[in-house]
Length: 232
Image 1 (cartoon, rainbow, N blue to C red):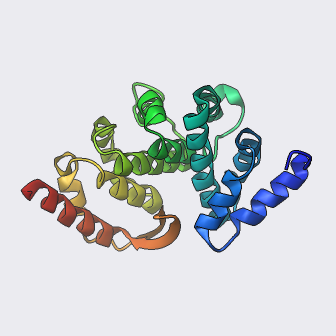
Image 2 (image 1 turned 180 degrees about the vertical axis):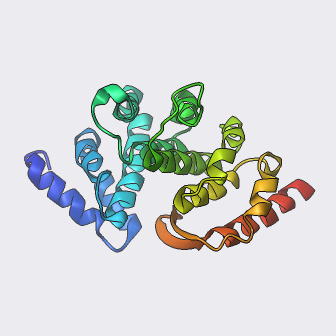
């Protein structure tokens, strides 16, 4: 692939992101020069096609975690680029960056230990709070992905979920319910109980696929699993 143009590489990456088998998609992308494939993946984080966008999130996490294992500074550069994209001074909006940060850290403990606190800071009004609702969805999902994979690493984030669990936006509210399931149940039990009858739906990307989820059913699922953990 060394002689392939940037345009051809981007076209090839998109073709693989659309491959019906997720594992094939990721394995083929990991077979490319890792540093070179980062830029095409960044562009697909902005895709309006949900399937392509979320596949790009997963693939980016796989690529950057592999980079971290081989050459950690190259991986840190990508993580800093995510952060820059979410900075007002960047001039952009940073679509997909918080999700990709969370996915990457779910796959790389070293990067999670170094950058996890920054992802948490985007929820905190006293720190780097992001006001854009669509970006808040990404931060909540990214934290959920990280916390579900690495329990205990960012538990303090669970205390900042209540405003999102109370959101009028069903997508943000649903994302917050899913993420709350990664933290100690005591943090958000009452709100989850109040949401048990919530009939609104949203699309949730988990286990490498998009699914339509009823918020109330998810809240009940989390309450039951939380009770099992506390009684062990």
